[in-house]
Length: 244
Image (cartoon, rainbow, N blue to C red; front, side, top):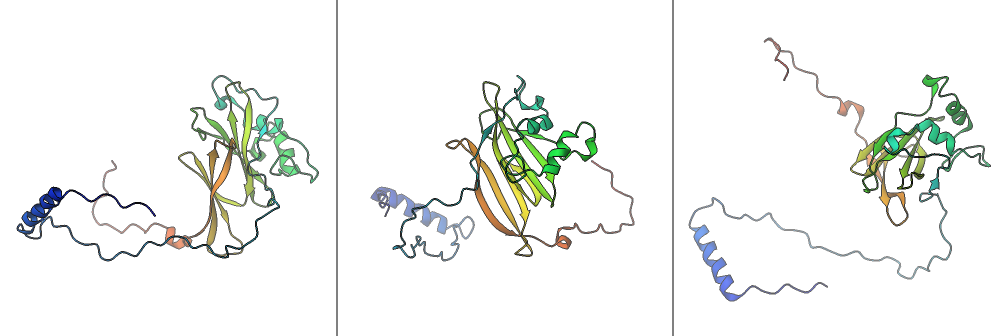
């Protein structure tokens, strides 16, 4: 329990009382009004306090896994001078499941990466973005990759003072949208089991693990498409207004 703050001196109470009396004589203008009753604050109650402690670690999903991209030198101007396709090719390693990379890039997507120069229209790499996600004043490289089964992979790469490049985030899902909010990356993905809802996950930089971690994961209700459409403009008999 927090200690109660000290009471004000008696003289101060007299001053406040006099001020209230003056305000009361001025009518209702400027009078402080009550906002109504408020609910009593209650602290969390622990349920089943006798549960045994967990002795085995949970399954590792690899959220905090990072990897140095070997063979890539960040130019003096920063990550804007890097080719995202070249970065992805440099970190390719074949895994036992027939995929490539820490978060699993399909083989056919990997094959398309090698043909990006010859067939740019079929290249799965989206337009890259550059933002300071770590707060160190240097921009990170954000790459999106389209894959089969309506999957989209999102990867982030951080440069260091020595010109090296480290992957600090790698994930993939059936994404509806990807947003940047401050230094956070917000991913929205479909929910097959709960119609009318989506998953919204926020990835934020964690200095302790030196990686982008899932700091918020929630299920949100989605408005119907009809509700998102703007109302049709009303017909007007007068001349059209000039643009500003």
